[in-house]
Amino acid sequence: MSVTSYSLFFFFRFFFFFFFSAFYVHSKSLPHLSSPYLSPTTISPNYHHMLKSFKIFIYPPDEDLAFDSRAESLFYASLQNSPFVTHNAEEAHLFFVPFSSSLSTRSIARVIRRLRLDLPYWNRTLGADHFYLSCAGLGFESDRNIVELKKNSVQISCFPASDGKFIPHKDISLPPLANSRAANAQANKTTSFLGYFRHTGVKESTLAKKLVNDPDFLIESELSDQLTYAERLASSKFCLFEYGVDVSGIGEALRFGCVPAVITDRPIQDLPFMDMLRWQEIAVFVPVVGVKELKRVLVRTWGDRHEQMIRLGAKASQHFVWNELPQLFDSFQTVMYELWLRRHSIRYPRRESE
Image 1 (tube, rainbow, N blue to C red):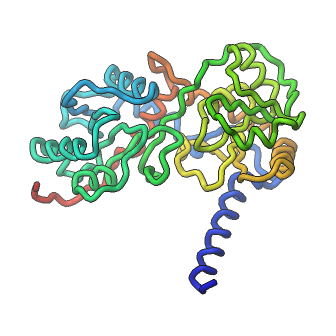
Image 2: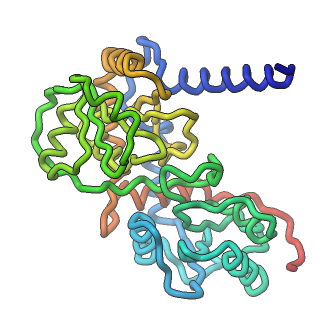
């Protein structure tokens, strides 16, 4: 093996060790936390300031918009009907570039070129005070218009984001829309199971095959009715999710006190509200390991800090609720807060339009 290969090997080994140490190897002497937020003293005043002052200008779309996911449709409908929208572009903090999910990259480039030629706002920042909605996300292209859109503008995509199409700390991921809304069951936290794993829609789940014969885990492949589903969540210590497969129930897991355990083979950089929530305190992140190692991590985590994780997770769960009519701190308004945090764009020097 060459010197370069050895260097890369030890770099990635250190990187993965550091990531998983930060996310799921915690000291028993962790301080008591009363808030799931990274900045608990600033979120409330900032949030209410955002509600009063934040303004967004929506460019008129070239055609009726169609989206691939219900979360995208809910976000766009909520944005259109929200008090954040202004018809005076001069008072806008951010500009929304609307286009359908099915629009080709070439067509999106034409949309950006038209904005550059017809209106002054794109050229002031080269798109840094603009944002767009794309569930699948955009890749890097050679066309200047797409380069500026991808590099400078805020992308709102679905969680989990497509590999290589998400830029951390700039882009935003929509919280997943649950497959079913669990009933508000008054279920006792009996913790009958160490872990609950529902793999609906996954034909061949390797994780399910590993756990199916273990009595400490409840494995389901069919959707339960809402009451039964709520009871499953409330009677399990951990809810298992395979990153990149199906994470639609993560918000409901938090709400019912089932600590999310996300199984992943790489660091996660696109968690919803990652620059706002203390994810390492409301969920556990476990590398792809065998059943014994998985159980060891879960048992240790439960013994060290389960009460705090459940309490903080319940507070954070309000941000994972999608409503037809937006409410305070729900999914739509929290995404808006994330946008508001990004409103201070870097001012690029103006260039001549092509």
